[in-house]
Length: 593
Figure 1 (cartoon, rainbow, N blue to C red):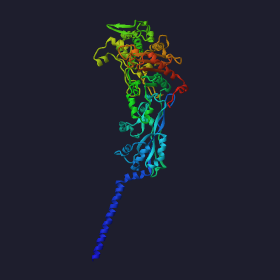
Figure 2 (cartoon, helix red, strand yellow):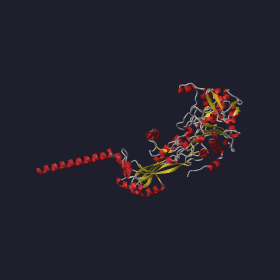
Figure 3 (cartoon, rainbow, N blue to C red):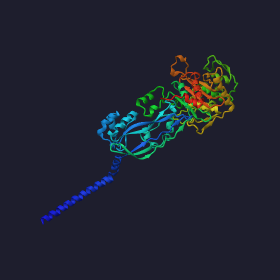
Figure 4 (cartoon, one colour):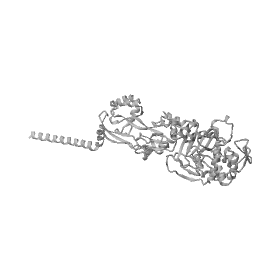
């Protein structure tokens, strides 16, 4: 009986143990299959599969003559999959990469980071460094080389304010839904055309799924989704014109904007000094960025659209058109210049202290007589001047597809009362009639105005892409004979004796234009003793050929002094480069090494 009881008890205990054991096994299997199944499957797959992103070749940017302005280049990086990497290998990896061990540890141990997502450890490897890592990566399981697409800007700083540069996603862009499909370490357009057309230029990244062994060595390719190349774009800009113009500035601060009069296509946009976009292509160093930000010459400022200046005597083009159209003068209306004009207790001088004598509109334009245009302003009044200036595109944004465009200022009586709580005075009309006082413009506005004068009064929006449909913003409603007369006088400024822009005279084409000298300080002093920052700005606006204009432009040299000596030669070089046949353009181009 006792034996039977012991046996029955043992069987019960063993049965309980078996049941408990099986319950533990079932619970464990349930935990592994359902609670941890997803994570374990990832670990299992990561032991043999690796998904590698394949960057899409970025679209190429061409100039109007199909000359490439950029090329793609590989940008090598070294990354690691944390789940495959052993912390014991960290000191050796730090030595191999030449990176501090603490910096690597911080990247690998970032909170909230999945151990299955690769972590980029070092960027911008040279070919030699790539070879060194490839030779030793078997010592560091999970380590691999990945490649991004970067840019080489073939002409360096030439056209940088227009073409732009690439950069990594900013913190704000990382949160933006528009960039949700962009890998966080990818380069995207951050300035200029690269930014404006980034979505079409960047294309669609591909993918490679490979099988790897325990050391991370590739065994075979399992799946490949090829990348889709970005769309090429052709700018309206002429790189030969652009480069010759930038050379002519010789580093002096200023701007140039050139347009095709009948379409509004942008032929050139210079902002000097500029910057080298190649410094941004692989991530600009902090000290280099600080240098650009602290540079007193402001290389990151796009002077062509973001800076406003008094137009000086280039404004006399507006005055001539307004005077003729409003009937205030005719082409043979005489005015006697004795070196200045007195009005009440005030004296308004002419740039030629001895005076120009008796002049008609023709000689007043050619020799830029201030007194003549004081008289025109007196007869017109500021509100009529405002009317014609705004008709020709001044005092408002041009609509160019570049950021932070300024709109300048064309004053009138209503503006003065609203802004200054004061009536308008005749003395202010005199000053504004020669492009001083309150009036201010941007280089892109002056180019649009000059295009309008040369094309018969049509104001087009500046366009960046070749072949874009012209966008007519407005029509000046000025008689053709008035514009033809003024164009003839502007030709005289360059090509007649006594013209203020003889330095722009060309044997290649016929150029017409107008110089301008815009005061920076209210009291003129001998420039020999005047600090550079107080010297006058130099303007020249032009078009060519006079017979059938194919280019219109504006040039501004900050503190350059006289428009005829500082700005006109730059315009001449730009126009002559534009007139070259395509094969000759290639001969004069300088490619950055």
